[in-house]
Amino acid sequence: MPRDEFSIEVKRRLAQRAGYLCSICSNITVGPSDETHTSVNLIGVAAHISAASEGPGSRRYDSVLTSKERSSIDNGIWLCNTHADLIDGDETTYTTSYLKFIKETHEQKIKFRLSGISVDKGVITKIELSNFGQITSPVVLEFTDRNIIYGNNGVGKTLILELIASLSDKSYLERWTDDREVKANSFCNVYYFKNQLDKFSLAIDNKDRVLYSFNDTEIPFLVPTMTILFISESYWDYLRSLTEDEKEDKSLVKLLSSYFRLSEDEFVNVIGGIMRDKKFFFNDINFNEQKDDLIVKVSDKLHSPAFSFRALSGGEQDRVLLEITLKIAYYHAKFNSTILLIENTSFGTLDSRGINSLFDILRNEQPNFQFFFTTIPNTDYDVEGFKVYELFVTDKKNVAVQVKKNMQD
Image (cartoon, rainbow, N blue to C red):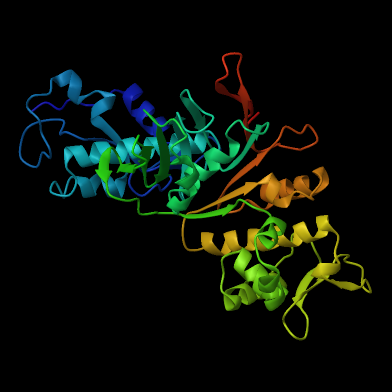
């Protein structure tokens, strides 16, 4: 029985679209050979999804396909030798539809990697929204590992972070279910990639009901598949929300634990981790003897003094809080896909130098969590290595989006 083989060009295209990685195990399938200084060792295979010919041992043969369709790139998948043999030995697991799904998902992953987005830990790749708050017409933002959203007050920066945060805590939707808000035809789609591309959707109807769906299937509530940390208010705003009695009854450690939504023991362990590990902003952060205050060594000079947290300047205090925030995100990311959302107003005493120090850390440390930061436009920020969007109001009073800088620019 004649086989409908792939052409050399189809094989090459399949390999390139797969990044020369196996579509199942992601192992590399090409590299140098020691035979000569120009030799290449290729251990990948352009495998047929539907069998190339009919006969004994043919897997997933489809008589409906034409010879041209069987030898087309649509019927091929790039695999390592091991998995090429495996799919031909297990037609029950590796059905035609499943192999097409594997191929599509792998090519999506390669596409994200090509644009500088690491999806191995799971990332939000895109958000679509319309008729939420200030954003009355459709807006689309595509994200990478590190993202900055610029915009003046009232254009929807906070809204975007709240919609993302609502995937794990629906309380962030409360102010958008107010009867004064126009909600007809409102929608928000958040696209998330980890092993495959999933779509989380929510909408608020005219009866203030929040409607959820996952991959276009309606569900009664969203079950978060990622950890989302949202620093939406400053520590000082948090203190102002407490009564005087509440503030007097709590030590600094208890107040900070509550601010970060941790138990006191958990917070103590986070500070212990900072003491053991590399510091980002300071030479040392420790507890006092009573373990009710933080003692910070600002300078790395040998005999430099240590100060109580309360004795630090506002900018120095915010750096301590940022240090703790990053450490919490790092710990979460060891075990789960993690997204850190920060509003600049939460660390309002930091100047451009302090914000740029944060950006330097995120560039140099290559954190294993996704990062979002909102701020008003500031030309003093060094945004190299970040994807930057600006939200602005058009002449028609609609909110529009423009890309200010891509990671690869």
